[in-house]
Image (cartoon, rainbow, N blue to C red):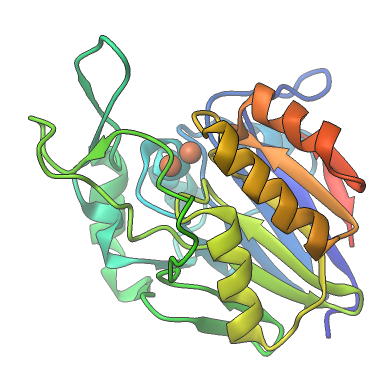
Length: 278
Ligand SMILES: [Fe+2]
Ligand SMILES: [Fe+2]
């Protein structure tokens, strides 16, 4: 069991304190006893400037986990590798796919991994570990790989495609999350959670063999969620009854308010500079 677990938000859509920069993107620095890792790299190198301001030293961080291949999670990769060339990267092979999204009344927008990041990843291919199945970094730190999806009311949360004409749906199968086994229970960390929060939590509980969920933090991609999905998600979370939930990045302000109003435990917004100890 992890005795001391600390998570620092290096990048989020919500601004933090004076001198910290924000953008649409996500990056966490996580310290689990003596094991340090970075989870996602935002959409640019700005998370590195926040790390400096927050006195987080990434020069020797051994592991980077990429939650999926969207630009707002992989965009700072090249800048990170210029700082730390020896980092080991864990991701699904599909992070390199081209992908697109459609917003109402707009052209399809390219939202895949930026060229600069995929080139940087190719340059260190010996240090890239492809994860499609559950993978342990230590006995208490796991990466889900592909998340099995059984909840009928959950979907990827948007109009996502693998082609520029919008004909081949992107199920974002590279989406992965992490779990940390602390003495208080599981701490679950998500990127965008395109697999759905209920699917992700259920999957992690089944593979980690731990039923106590202490906290959930990350992007939950509920901004376009239907009322039915929000209600079903809340019903599930109420029954799960964790200590806290930190809604970051793509959760959506309205959906976060919905969760906060419905749930009897602590629901907070993530923001740059937030530092949590579990
Ligand atoms: Fe995202
Ligand atoms: Fe995403």
